[in-house]
Length: 518
Image (cartoon, helix red, strand yellow):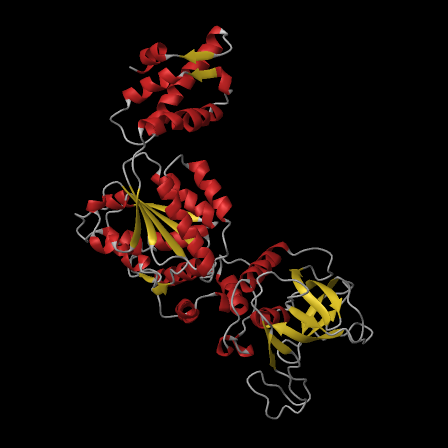
């Protein structure tokens, strides 16, 4: 994307200065605001550009931002003195390097650094247009070491701002909205206020006003301690989530197919359907409108396939077992009027993963409790699956879900309601044939068990006729779990013989296998 430049230059006659305002005799804003969408910061896509008219800056320049409200500049202290908000050294020499341009996403962060007199170390590159800054670290006042806690907070803000879109004009906070700094930790109120000052634009727009309302509640003197605790907890949960956009980078289809083959044998039609979804994402760079419902008998690898999808999409995943949910409030949260109120499992999934873009694995969808006095808990998933957001009763705000990819598993589709079924792309997974199970035992189940037990392949050898005996024993069972259990039984017996009798290896034929398993 080409840079979009907004000329914010003002003359020194400040009688009609706009929102950023100034007083007589004080320089007004002299920078340009550049709108970029680059997610990786570099000298080609810098946070800001500084003037080098007075002197060239080194690659790493320690100092402090000064005059944050008007005519912002960077005072290069050379690490020899503490942060000097006047921009002058002890001999009266001007240390200022005016900001020529700044990435629109980082305006609030730069002003926060200046207002709070944070000593920083810039990393940049001298070019014709000026000193291009692409990294900022929080350092001690003499510039000799990193301030760990404050720098951790700073890097969090920079990382999320770099991945965000440039804000609209009315999303840039006015200078008088900026707050004093506190502990740089998102677990306390001061750090949450700092984050809102620096990186408000990383929140969904409706959550920006929601955060302000919660801050008002927290500061109110008329609420109970319990209400204040709930408001702080809700704010903490929201701010610690990385709210990403709905753009998804391309996925390597070769690597995607490799992951599927590593996880499961056969099931070509199923793998083909998932690969079609991958190609669709690569074309549109958005998630499909429908999630996946993997339906089939127990033990055939539905959950394993769901985790493989998460690996392919390179997203964190969280799982939910619907057979253990007996109340819809467990999913949608309980109102704050209760002392023991808490957010629902869906919101907790965002919090645990730290991201709004996740694979949400819904296990045993067909086993949701339809006899609950509050109705079928699975129905609470409808708004989540519609991809238009849902409201958590505890958070009291609409939660965006356009980055959530639901993958559900079920044994019996007939037990799932029609409204739920209509929100999934259904993939029917058939049971394996006896020949397929034989290959799975030899190439997947047995090697997996031997590796887990620290055994070499030659220490436990299972003949083909022995595998036929295993298949005979479990001929009425679906899936491959029983095959792995049989492999573990044989491997454990082989290991026992090796350790107690001194043999080098054990070979199982049809007879010895039948004696062991039957």
